[in-house]
Length: 184
Image 1 (tube, rainbow, N blue to C red):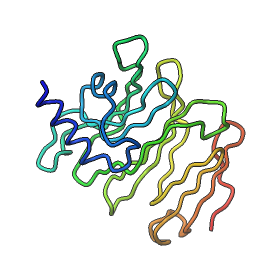
Image 2 (image 1 turned 90 degrees about the vertical axis):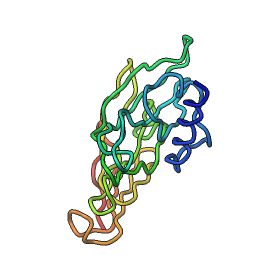
Image 3 (image 1 turned 180 degrees about the vertical axis):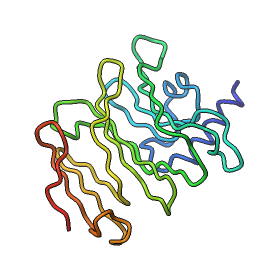
Image 4 (image 1 turned 120 degrees about the vertical axis):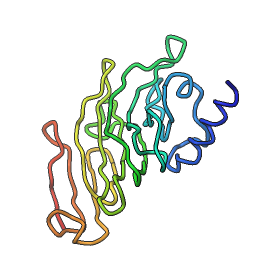
């Protein structure tokens, strides 16, 4: 058992360049049935993006990307919400995982950015957390996505990678959703 935990920790460290902590938090490790890749605390819980299933030659092919909310109370740590993100494949990379109150400052939210492949691009997702479930609030495709309270900035390496030939899109949260306010 100790060898299995050490192997999972080593794999997680190798894959988690964007995690806030250097080692997988014990509640996350105890609760999920997969390989944690990125995690962030969200209130008393942990938000984790993980891989489930055996990977093929590159470690991803045949696995599934999933996200979970790991609750620490009441003990023992357990998965309070779990959702499939997509199938995994060679070239996938988790860029970052965050938690906060991104939209209007009142709701608990989690976000992550997942690269399909460098040539295909990446997508960032923002979910509201509540009542043991995730609700998709918005998703943004771009090379770099920066979240601030009420504002999302999506930038592109070059105009050819963006849908409309722009280098930057700016979205503001208004009326319950993100609305495009600037395109440069």
